Image (cartoon, rainbow, N blue to C red):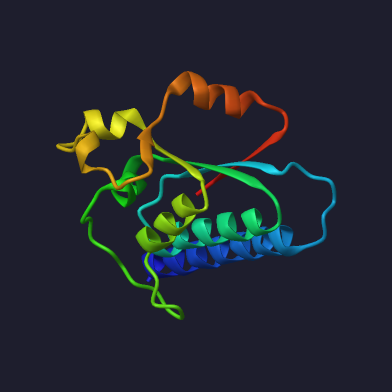
Length: 150
């Protein structure tokens, strides 16, 4: 019973966070940063897809978006990885990731993902590169960059 209750509370917390972020992304232009670094680490397909949807909407509002995939989310960058199709659009996080790449989003994969899996660069979908830690650190330290982590 407690475990089920904790799961529900976590889902509610995540949903509220997304609602706040969605309102922020779709609200008025308050002069905030137009450079986003989105770090995706979760294995939850709903959260993965929502991070991509927010990236897409931010691009449509003039933002420059870079995405870093690490941990469990690294599998999104692997060719032929299992896809979970979500309602209402019957879209998977991988489909949305490919859409972002077509919009010139710089998508990078944590180098530790490859070195700790049986995958190599040849296993990555087109448009995904291996992150260079020094370059990511520069983005993290740039005061004009807003960092979102999922």
